[in-house]
Image 1 (tube, rainbow, N blue to C red):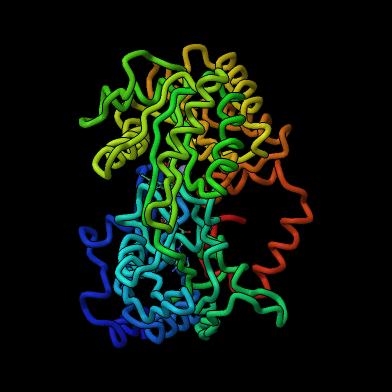
Image 2 (image 1 turned 90 degrees about the horizontal axis):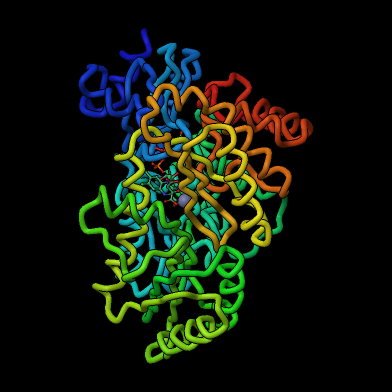
Length: 467
Ligand code: FAD
Ligand code: MLT
Ligand code: ZN
């Protein structure tokens, strides 16, 4: 019996999409850079259904492309264009299976939206700290599979650090139940780490046990104009020390990004009367009430201003003001879409190398494409710079995008000189899977390929991504 008929026997009709109008949103990525084809989009509702779908696909030699919220930025959830694929969307598997407040853990299905998990934790007086601008639509399985980062990694770590256990459907359809809620487990290889960050190339994650934390009760959010990138780095050390390591976010926004946000995203504003080259959005949190964290932030910033590190600073006096400052951070991402073609990078270097990386990479790209606009923002507290590039005014988008390969090399060569990585949090997908070979030792790919072969000998899981 043909595969689609066999799938129809195990799935509800509304969970097996084949009409072009229904499948289209699953076949292109958030940036509309990649377009693929698929025999169908399947939306199983249980781990058992995922297992049966994968087993049938394996038998038929059809590839599986797992998909969560489809907000990924490396084209990893878009199928190839040969059409011999099934997109397996986890969106129907969106139940919170358990929350153990005493154990500070939550067990969730892979299709839960990140925000849903944050809200469930808050209701139980706990905190799930992963936070990123796409949190209203990205899903836990996608967060795990890209090892997502975001704005609170400085304090809580990335998705890998936040995960205790996984349930995975393997490429032959068998189910691995590794949903252990243990903070220590040295009984053998830690297999969950193979699947985290694998971008769907080793199996389908169906559920996870995630760590929870005490709920923050107070936060101090500050928007700060700094004298230079070196001053920003010095300030990072001071704020960490002053807050007793309660520093949660340390985000960098250059002047050009604030200007583009103000020009293109309604609701954006300049918090200061005078322009400055570089800004930071800083947040400290405390799980204690009356912690005095705002006073701590004020004192630390005042001292930094006296010492010439900080030019101007404003601290939100209430939640509305804090939300307005965070809106600016999101507007910076949004504004890029309004200004024409952009070329994105997701570089990470050791913190101490960030200023030199930005200076050297800027010089390299400005020499290569005169008039290019460097739009370098991101998670300075983690050394993660989204060294994004906007087309020079007047240049045609296609002409700018034709420079992508050359510009990528220039930027990534500088990051390599500073012992960095070409992907901090977005993954390789099909955007960076070839170029990465230039920047990691061949032995790492040999090991990765052997692992892939051991777990997915037929190569049916998300082919053409990562490796
Ligand atoms: P998808 O895009 O659906 O999939 C991503 C990858 O995971 C694909 O390889 C897919 O095959 C695989 N996958 C999905 N679900 C499963 C599963 N259940 N089992 C196995 N594999 C699976 N990322 C950050 O890290 N930090 C940020 O600050 C950040 N900000 C963003 C802001 C915006 C506005 C946008 C659009 C994106 C941002 N991202 C950020 C990127 C993106 O949101 C994250 O990578 C997110 O983790 C992807 O989740 P998703 O559910 O959309 O995954
Ligand atoms: C962010 O930090 O906002 C993102 O990772 C999105 C981007 O790089 O555009
Ligand atoms: Zn980011």
